[in-house]
Amino acid sequence: MPDAPTPGLSTPDAEPPILPAPRSSARMLELVFPKDLNGHGTAFGGFVLSLMDKAASMAAIRHCQGSVVTARMEAVDFHLPIRRGDAVALEAEVIHTGRTSMRVKVDVYRETLATGQQQLATSGIFVFVAVDENGKPRPIVRQE
Image (cartoon, rainbow, N blue to C red; front, side, top):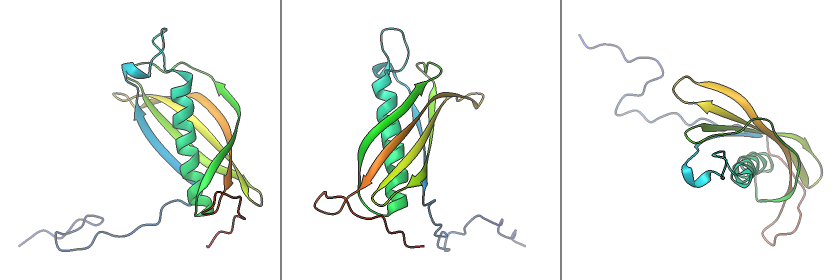
């Protein structure tokens, strides 16, 4: 007698479920390679900022359901160094929405992959503006 399918696992002929993505947040995981390091053996600040901008923009795009541009980076704090071989786990979340702009908080954790231990390494706030197809600011109207 064949075993019953395990709940949550699909069978070969079953369509996988379509799940909605979170609408105002984003998560990323990245490895730190030698090309990402400065002379001290720690991640370049610009490398970390670019990852933060990428994660923040994904949260902003999800939130406003359209294109965005980075308007400002504010209050970025580097708490701990990130070293070669560390994983960088980023969590971004829209924390405030105006008429055309959004503030997105980003936390960056350095992670030891073998143990899963994470420590907050960097945090910051990014401001994005929703734009139309001509690159002009547009009101943020969310469809729920």
